Image 1: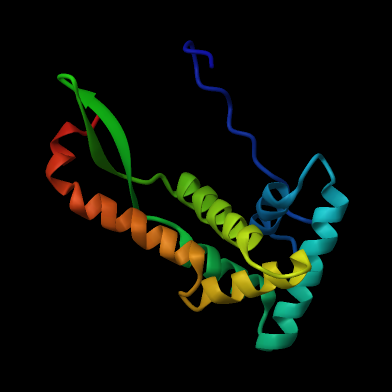
Image 2 (image 1 turned 180 degrees about the vertical axis):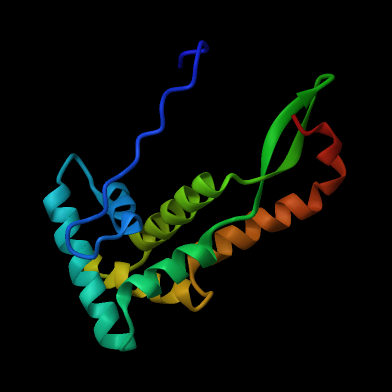
Amino acid sequence: MSRRRTPKKRFLSPDPFYESRLVHMIVNRLMKKGKKSLAYRMFYQAMKQIGETTQQDPVEVIEQAVRNATPLVEVKARRVGGSTYQVPLEVNPERGTALGIRWILTSCRSRSGRDMVTKLTNEFLDASKNLGNAIRKRDEVHRMAEANKAFAKYRF
């Protein structure tokens, strides 16, 4: 990683069907081995199922799910005088969104079930209702930050 300057931020174009940048971010994280068309197909089928079950706009349900899974604080390890402290830090909004998406997709992959579309649908529905493994992960991170609040003076 270069130490001289930070690279320019690249902005994603919105996806073709729903015109949403969030959908494009999720598809990029869902994609494996460069198979973007397969990722789009799976995600759009999941969106269709979400729309049928909730009778709402699926993009709003997905936005709510990601918003619920997004952490506000996280802990980072910091070495001070030979000992390592878990220092709580506020999360940048972009990083928070990326973490929320990542946690939703990893918990969806670890779910039991046959096809990825139903696992994706169920995980997004659970996260939009503040349930599921991604929400549990966010609560665990928040609990860790709360427990280590005494080390906030070591922020960098």
